[in-house]
Image 1 (cartoon, rainbow, N blue to C red):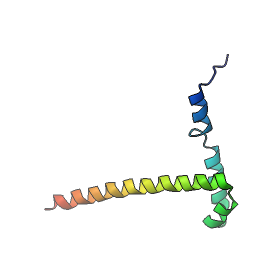
Image 2: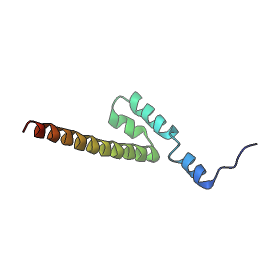
Image 3: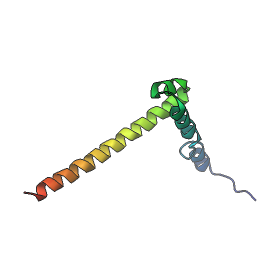
Image 4: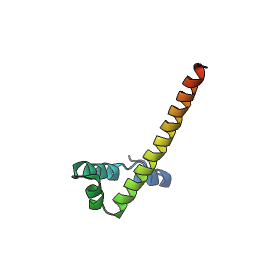
Length: 80
């Protein structure tokens, strides 16, 4: 017997848990001759996903940069 999905579970599966679109987009970008050509092949939804992934990557770079800066400051202070 199958259990019914709650509306929140269904929404999650249709959005955050659905990585099919991201995987398809990455495949298009990987097989394109260059990044710009790959993005040009995407529909508006695909371009929106690329924008969101780039936004997340930028946030990760900031976090990584902050950690690196903190580590470098700690190292510099240890020599004083």
